[in-house]
Length: 244
Image (tube, rainbow, N blue to C red; front, side):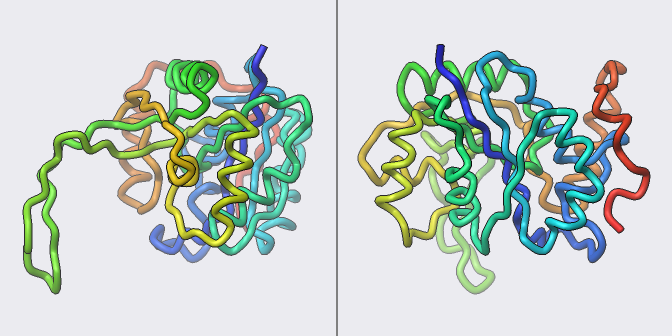
C-alpha cells in the first residue's frame, strides 16, 4: 500500500494578512487554530504514515509552547522552515520517513479541503506519479501594465492551482534537486520542469487559501453554514489565547 508523508507549510510571512499579532495559520477559525483544521485532514488516514508541520524559525518557541500538546496527541512532527517556500519544503523533506512512498504538500492556510478531495488527489498521484487539486478559471482575465488594460487573456484551459499537491517521493526529490535555485510558486512547477506530466484533479472553490482578512471572514461564513460537527479530541489541548 502506498504511504504518504504530508508536509503542512506554516512558515510564510503572512505579509498580506494584515495582522501584526497573528500569522494566518494561527488565527482562530470556528473556535480552532487554522493549522489544526488543515492538519486534521490528514492525521488518522490509513495511507498517511507521517504528518510534518513546517514553521518559521522565529515562531518555533511560541508554537511549541502553545501547541506542543496538540502535536503529541495527534502524532504530528514539526520542523523549522526557511526564508522561501522552497526552503521550507526542503527542510520538511529531510524529515520524511523511509516508510513513505509518496509526499504531499499542503498549505496550512487551506483549512477547507475535504476528505474526498484528499482521496482523489492521492489516488491520482499513486496512479500517475504527480497530481494536484485545481479549479477551472471562470473569471475574465485582464493583463494590466501601469494601471491600464493591455490585453484580455483567453481563459480556456486555465486552472487555478490548489493544495494538496501529491507526488511519488523519488520523482519529487529529483524535481527539487534539479531546481535548487528556481523561483517557483507551487510544487507542481518543479515536476513540470523535469518534463514529467502532472494530473489535474478538480477541487472546489471552497478550498480557499486564507491570505487576507476577507478570506478569513469568508472561511468563517462557510464553516458557519455547515452542520455541527463532532469536535476533535485534540481540541481540548488548545489554549484560549493562541498567540501571545
